[in-house]
Image 1 (cartoon, rainbow, N blue to C red):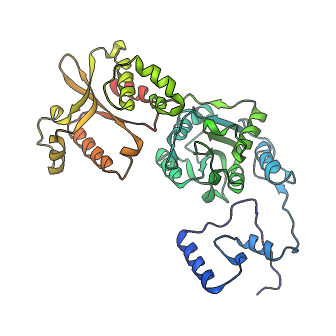
Image 2: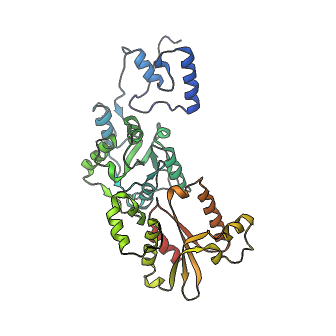
Image 3: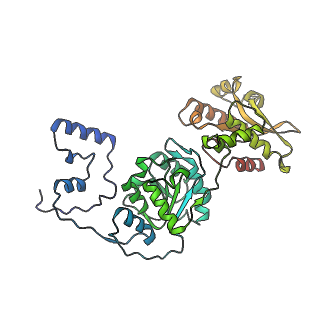
Length: 391
């Protein structure tokens, strides 16, 4: 209805987010009305619609940039804005403005969650970059909601802000960590507008965590890695590893060689790998008094079921219910630590096995028997076992 309208926006950033319910409502209206496609709210922002409807309308680029460290925004300037931005920020921080951490080779992403990248952020990025997770200066962005949920859980109790790139648009943090998630970058994560938003949220430092396969590919994220490498001349190769890395196809030869030297105790290579790891740990002088048994029935460990409720009693008494590994005191045959191996898909939340896991956890807790669960998508199993035995 106005005689004049001024619309401010950026077609190089993300459009409006439309939920599935609104999208269905929009599609229904368009199916019934025959309105031109340019008005479809699901696919067009106000800015993109007006740009298409009025191609001759006057435009101006807001060129002056005041937020990011010059080296951070220069990537966006060259990649997305044809070098037209005038960067008016100054280099004030002493920290390195750009960094890349690359996970070891392997298919670490499962259901849009990459636990290895989370482990790298917690164990390497934060301590090595001396990041303060108590003052609200650190934000972690990721393309996917599942990874966001996992990050929020991992950093609960800290001042770290974790969210999807789409939700972070319009916000900023002194330090931004970008978790790319994918084993091989996909179209959604590599979207140019999404990457432009992710990078330009960082004020003083941008840290990118990528999978090994992403760094040299001809993608938008690959361009970012190459840009950072050109400016820093190095990519940090992560040292965060897991015994389960042997399970990946790329390690097939190494797995065969490793397991050929070990005693096989299970039909599952994941359990054979953990058995070899535990056996190696127990050779340490501190732990020589301990032995390890495989697939021990739970009813042999918990003989008095008086502390259990009906469901727990039924589960504990079942002949098939066992613990994967029981570390025990060889002198008194006393149980000391239970180690469970959790294949990601078989044990993930919502499965029947996940419900059984909760039952088993509850039983072990009632009888004061420590346990650790080693997920095949996690890392650091050796140190976790050592820490548990020390405790």
